[in-house]
Amino acid sequence: MPIAILALALSAFAIGTTEFVIVGLVPTIAQDLGVSLPSAGLLVSLYALGVAVGAPVLTALTGRWNRKAVLLSVMALFTLGNLLAWVAPGYSSLVVARLLTGLAHGVFFAIGSTIATSLVSKDKEAGAIALMFTGLTVALVTGVPLGTWIGQHFGWRATFLAVAALGLLALIGSALLVPANLKQSAPATLRQQLAVLTQPRLLLVYAMTAVGYGGTFVAFTYLAPILQQVSGFAPGAVGLIMLVYGVSVAVGNIWGGRLADRHGPVKALNRIFTALAVVLAVFTFTAGNPVTAVLTVLVWGAFAFGNVPGLQVYVVQLAEKYAPQAVDVASGLNIAAFNVGIAIGSVLGGAVIEHMSLIDTPWIGALIVVLALALTRLSGRLDRRTATATEAEYV
Image 1 (tube, helix red, strand yellow):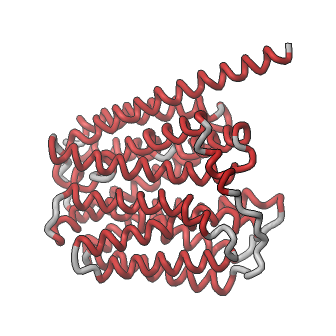
Image 2 (cartoon, one colour):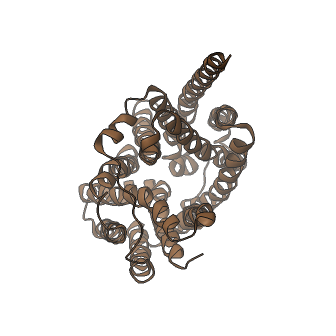
């Protein structure tokens, strides 16, 4: 593998860290800036909104730009966004910083895979993408708990400064290692991109993604205050628990991919969404005890991100059938759907805290995941109906 892919992996590590580290810092930021927990949680939603806009819109606008130029611009914006968060004098400026960083995130993951594959031969493309995304997985296992620990001990601003340093390192690595003459496919036309949004089957999968992934974030956005206020953990222990969660996520992501390969994405998603809804409902009752809370969080991580491979594979399969000219666009829109789910889930979690209580977020998240399960079953039924109709045509 070319060493340039390591620069992409470092970028993915920095971006993954800044996206999810905010979860461990919600109580710290709320206290320091004098805002409510829902307002601090809104920083998760607004970042995700930036990703959702950045992935399809900015990727389309920069479709004809040189790929390396886009990559360097994105990492410069990412670094700037984290530096702004570091020096943010108040809540409003921190919101702007998070939005800017989210825009950079969306474009990076939209173009990162194509850059990685352009650096290797055809038979090594999957390995190149996997190596790049390893940076994201490592971020969940080490970057997020380490960033949470830094924020707990040195202040939340120090976390953003550390991530900005990582972004700058990734920017320098990309400038030195990524070649300028990357092969570039013709960007999809506006008509091809809009065609994706006219396909009911693809829209159904985007709804599955947003609802299924978003259900988790109703509670996950406020995991740190739950652990502190309900489970009774000291703030310094949250980073260690995030490490437990990150390891579980890494295992669940691999397991979810294998399950989707073995049984097909729909069957895999049915099982994962069912288990996720049960775990979230159970957490409502186990959060009050430190031991059972950590054990539930450990299981939760495996199912919370285990649905990602199946959802991504499923949207590609359906795009090849219903929008073959814009498979990449369809895949990018699913990344946007993940982040729409995060945004909606975080906002809903904040509303639950304001009108109900902190510990009501898990069971309400479970209900939303049940809705995702119902949508998945509907999509599976439509698949079977289409397959039956196709068979009938050949008889």
